[in-house]
Length: 95
Image 1 (cartoon, rainbow, N blue to C red):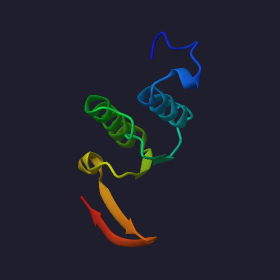
Image 2: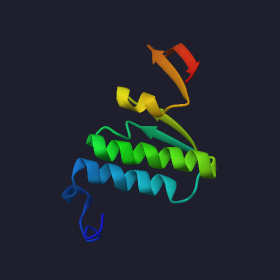
Image 3: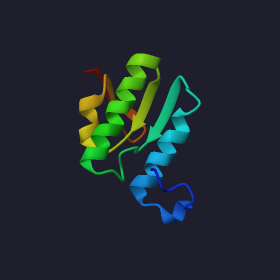
Image 4: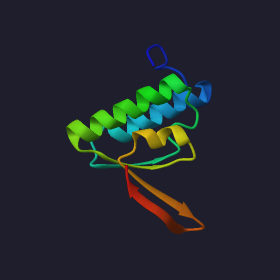
């Protein structure tokens, strides 16, 4: 996001705002990140980069990601999948 330092949030695209939110979430090196639709405003290439980065953080720094998503592409990156419907768990499986 080089060259965007002086822009206000409203001046950024949805994908750029999403990347800033992710960066803010992981900069403090948490053990758990709760991510609500982290790929919602990203194109396929950006989604792949983000999920690859999440996987690296998980493997190297043991960061756990709890991701709420409707994006079926994200499932390929998950080690565990928990599906909910009407507030109830309807599936819980290791990938």
